[in-house]
Length: 491
Ligand code: PNW
Image 1 (cartoon, rainbow, N blue to C red):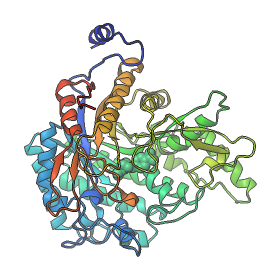
Image 2 (image 1 turned 90 degrees about the vertical axis):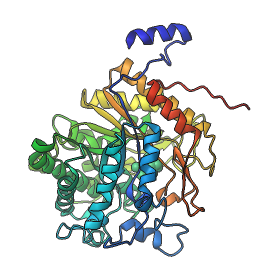
Image 3 (image 1 turned 135 degrees about the vertical axis):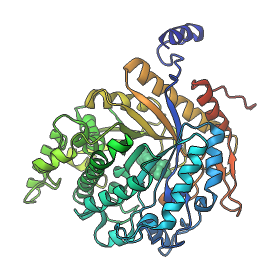
Image 4 (image 1 turned 45 degrees about the vertical axis):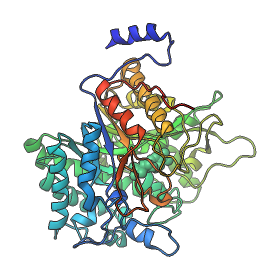
């Protein structure tokens, strides 16, 4: 590998930036989706409403998840699409209210179990490993009515649900992701009301959500560890989204504090030796809270037992990464961003650089090096842990466009950064997952942003999965083990 890299380096005559490295044979490639975004069939059989069904059924919403890709009925086409790419694995999620109509395990839906059995067996029959996310945001409305992620009992409810998932599918599923991107639903749902439950209470509600997520994940990991590991020998991890925070040249330490909030709050309790919240952040929030007249820290503390419960609950680290921000302390006349997670605590602002091109969703600015820097930061902070990149991909707003050169360039450049992190920084990355296998419902942003390697025309009842140019590029990556892309379009 190293030899190849050096030779390629000489041949290409490029210095430093891109070494022409290739992926080792055991490296795995996948693609991902999530139940609410693709399944449709929101009320078939005994399925009950999720918070997202209701959120998009509210007055004024111009779209909903009632049909979307109709994968509930067209899952065989998804399996075919995955097989045509030559994927090693397909990451999808289970719908909690489809499997447990009350949200609790007193009743397990036969229909729900059968749906996921078919999908899992269909994938295995094509040699594709199912990698399963247990929770990707579609909380049963029933449980939301009891407070959802703000109710401390959610840890028990989630562990009970995870046990059902492991016992029904654990004989065939060997890699599990407990919860997808708590950052997204604890911040968009509790800081600025873009996701259910639609609260705007940054600095209080978000922290409660994050703590309860960590305890829920930990309980679910321990259920696997204690009841299933000996039988099935699988792996379980929490799945976190990480925005790389770049520092300015005159940075006073604020950028690192923001990293410790954005990534640290969600990972330090699990991956650090000591466990618990990142100490610097815990102290700052406690001090701020007292000065503001609260009797105790707004960041709910962990008891000693809770620290032990959460610490070490990983078999690998699952990272979703798309974008970066610059983070720094406010300057004269500026005010901190008070409505997003933690920035007010450190008097921080976030912004993007003019040269970071914007892609097709509200938050998507492109900075390729952020991938490598984020991976290296994880290694520096949490040690030599095995990392699976569980999402990365490109969202455009280009409709049905098939010749998606921008997506190919994005994936190719990001893969190069992954190779550099592996070969030059020694980060142990074991796999890479494209978001997404097919165009789907992009949550509060509807059907306009498209992330698919396969195009889906939502105005055509057939909902055919049509491969884009990026699908053939990605299939080529998987066979060649190289990230290289030559733009062959004439223009
Ligand atoms: C993820 N950011 O969300 C989710 O896991 C997917 O369900 C979603 O469709 C996909 O990425 C594309 O958006 C993210 O601000 C939301 O960097 C926000 C960010 C990243 C990922």
